[in-house]
Image (cartoon, rainbow over the protein chains, first blue to last red):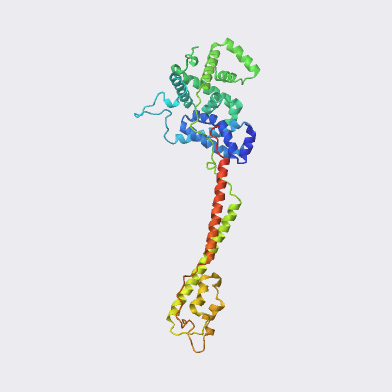
Length: 202
Length: 222
């Protein structure tokens, strides 16, 4: 994929060229939105909205990492969605039973190719991570999702959230520290190799 | 052994991502060897980071590729379409004009007919071919909407004979049975032309939209 050529063509209004870029990045865009928002439908809406905004604002792209530019668009869409979410009732991450109880290990989280045990373990891990992510302040959450879940380097994260490198370093350290404490409460649910040890005394 | 400060945690976190300079890294490694609390904090951060990296990736619920409608792109209009549209509009105008002229002629003929019917006197030698024969062309042909010599002769007051003879007298001989009005061929021509031009414009536009859709078709199987 000749990304610069596709971007140039898309900047001239070629939708087919832009859709080729969408196909290349929609996975990371959707998964980023999902981890920030914690809701499949909202994440899908934010992703779609981000791609539409990106196409319309493509002429403002001035080079650099296109992935970072695209992720900034989706991160902004997620912030907008979170602000809207604060003003209206929220939908729980987990589906509910008829009695209104949350389903502990929902089947819809599972990968159909995995064995039932693996599906269960994966669903529990995802549940624990998502729960802990949602307890983080939004700015910290975005940084840790981009750096640790999506694997962006500090420079790219800084470009996405438009903050200096020092801020990224600091937010990431705080986020990891908080996540570590939160994940400890899910100790029994985590895969054996990743079970965190109990807090060490002095 | 003391709990690491936030500055230490920040350094440990950055060291996991290779964000420390060589000097900073050497200094940190030396401290890690002598400070078990710092080493334990590093292990915790490493584990938290490893768990986050194992976050399952969700499959997409749908493709997020864009359609022209989503971004407000309209298919280009072929150059021929506006020309055809204008031509069809002109043909329609001509049709309406012809129809209107035709109707006006019929109305004027209709107004003249009772007068003819009410006329008690005849004038055999007047006019060419009698009233109905003289008025017929005015009804059927819009080119004769303006008074022709024949019609003028029939209606002009100065042509009235001195004896006060009625102008619109029916012929002395029984009037020939009125044949159906011949239809003005131009009505059909203009209407047909407008229909053909509109159909051509629509066909070209449709073909253009189809070509545009094929061009921006989304390859969801990529």
